[in-house]
Length: 275
Image 1 (spheres, rainbow, N blue to C red):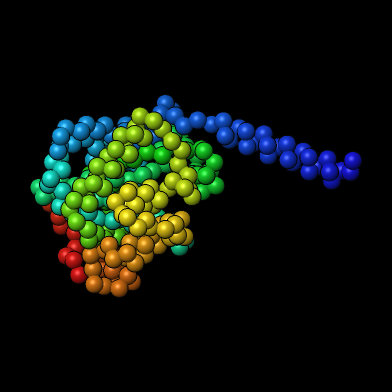
Image 2: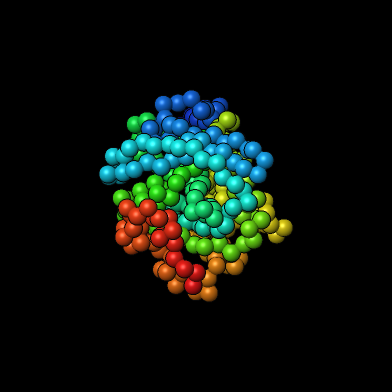
């Protein structure tokens, strides 16, 4: 047997062993989690009302310095008013971004759903390759905009774009319930995050597809979330008459977030009129 053949056999065995180790990994709820993701939301369904415990509303003095605060609130499903799609590009490279849905209620309350990698304490730098290797669990964090948007716009200085979504209230309600059910499921039965099949954008599209007869097809924009607004724009879901390029500029809210960061009506003030 030649040296090359022996080398190839060794390489093959190595990858088989690595694959076996990879497939043997199981997701868990019991690790030493990062403080900002240690506590997951708890959800109770009470007829047309939803009680959510452990909603995040941290206050910051810098990106890494914050006062931890969780609170509970009960929401009336019949008071859901609007839905917003949020994109946060966070890299100098074109493509990487985080995407979220924010639900707005008639009394001014809001809820942001964010599908995220659940980080362990003192986690080494997260790398895209590891995001597809059953390395990290996925969770749904439920935030108040006062925490979620200020962290990104005011402290990280990332671009934040908030698009108003055009869809009937009944569909917004069903989407909200779908995301609550998924958040509740992941808080009890963990799953792995996957850059390709289960990332922050594909999870949102899965929820939207539950409400559509004609499913949104897979596209490269789901893997490059900073372009994911093109998916919903092409479907006519962004409530605007602007071109996509114009809408991306108009619905950026960083300046408003800076201007009204201490305002008691912060969430109301950062929303732009539909144009």
